Length: 302
Image (cartoon, rainbow, N blue to C red; front, side, top):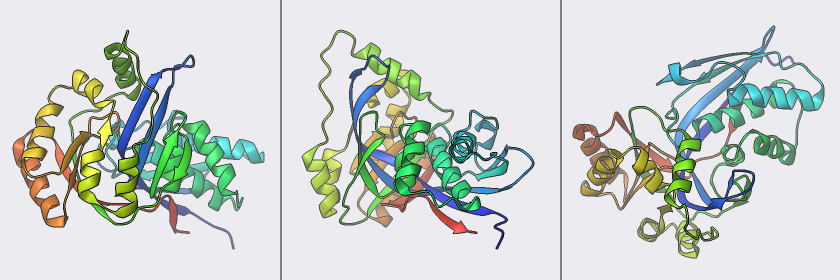
């Protein structure tokens, strides 16, 4: 049977811990990056075409590049090159993950396109081969494929999957505009210039909280070493964090490199209360409720 199109659903992420080491000679930073996939999704559909093209719809779709710099296009090209075929597909991204928001939306699209193309072309690539291509695409892309929870080391691409013993409820406040991840890391380096930056290590208390599903323990353990840099570049984010905390969030932090802010809450009712307060505050553009953990990239239509 000829496959005419494949649609893959792929989740956003929040970093429940982002421990950042000093800058390496290659410009990257060693990380202890504890990823948690959350139930906000992009859907990536691929179908045969005369050449590689991309379209995108959804919130802030106009900010998504539609050329070969898009990770979805690069995923198709890398996979095709490994198998000696032409990357002649049309890629459509139905975007629901905030753009440039620190939730790995671009990485999700790369992982989604990779799995979709592998399925469309009937390649049957192993998980290891797909993860290898993901690591070439970017530090967050392997986790977008895997989902659930994982510890990322190196620059974040080397994953150890983690056990999660329950479900967690989150609210995400979407800011106006994006933040450049390289700019946030550069600001991290500036703020830490002349200081001794410790080697990044995953928090045993945080890993135990995930394993047991203890939301209060997780709230006590979440951390993000990039948060001071994100707040330095975007000071109004502090107001958003304060609103969420004042509305009853158990923990409030910048998601990854920002500018999306993340609020861990006790349950669904608390999530709606925090989201309502954030929407009314005028400190963010939107507030989204999502559960975790979420499954990684998976085909939902073939």
